[in-house]
Amino acid sequence: MFRRTLTSAVATALLAAVLPAAALAQASFPEKPIKLVIAFPAGGPTDVTMRQLADNAGKILGQPVVVENKPGAGGTLPAQALQIAQPDGYTVAQIPLGVFRIGYTTKINWDPIQDISYIINVTGYAFGMVVPADSPLKNWSDFMAYAKANPGKLSYGSTGNLTSPHLTTELLAQQAGIQLQHVPYKGNADLMQALLGGHLMAASDSTGWAPHVQSGKLRVINTWGDKRLDKFPDAPTLKELGYDIVQNSPFGIGAPKGTPPAVVRKLHDAFKKAMEEPSYVAALDRYDMVPIYMSSTDYTAFAKKTVEREKALIDKLGLAKGN
Image 1 (cartoon, rainbow, N blue to C red):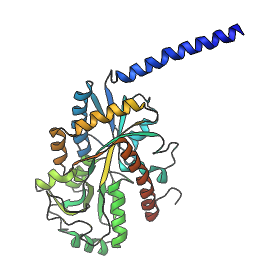
Image 2 (cartoon, helix red, strand yellow):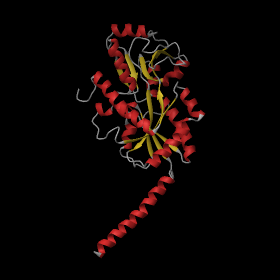
Image 3 (cartoon, one colour):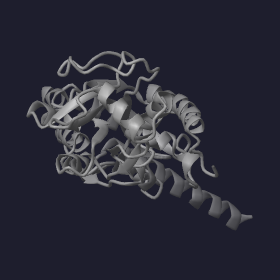
Image 4 (tube, one colour):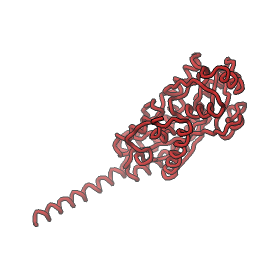
């Protein structure tokens, strides 16, 4: 009886000692650099804008936020990295839209909703299709005419299989009644190099192509938002071309499941403040992007809704695993 009482007392004392230590660790967070894993290679719009955001957040937090590029697998590798990271706030990751569809196309042992702590949404991509400036495909009518006359021979590149540029182009092709040849790349930098080098006829991507359009090397033949892009007012939207398609792809930052709420809140507040810095807004503007803020609660709700929407798209294209 005495031994049992003593053991219980020791356990209680140990628990009392541990809890304040954990609370203290959360209160003093961060005490070392934070790693931000992003889904695309160096040099593209995601890399450029997220590095500026990370730099801003690091100054606010008092510790560096170090970017690690982890491209491939349709932009889902950073989210997968969260599944083996410690839930202490020192590893966070970009969450592109592809994360919400991976469960329908690939066998995984984790859940995009249950196994990620959603911190904050920070921006979203503006998309469009581009061709070389000297291409005979001067506009969408030329593109359609060539595709119909040469089924499966018109090559286009994207930033990877099952990414938003890939799936949206396939949905467009389905609605237009044409067949295209898809070539996946790991990111915008590789894709632009291939297009400018003459290895592709067209490219579908976020506005990482913008500097090349502005320099006269590429031409925009359509964009995918609700309205035309301010920098490219001559390029029609898919809706204007007669297709019921709007694609803008919000993305933000997540942490491992079980990250303490106090740590999530501190990260949220720092990244929100970092989003408001003029340097971040200017970095986004370079690619016709804007800040798109969602709180942790709103971002979690968005994730749940998007998982349902992406299932419908995957089913429509017949790309679900097992098909």
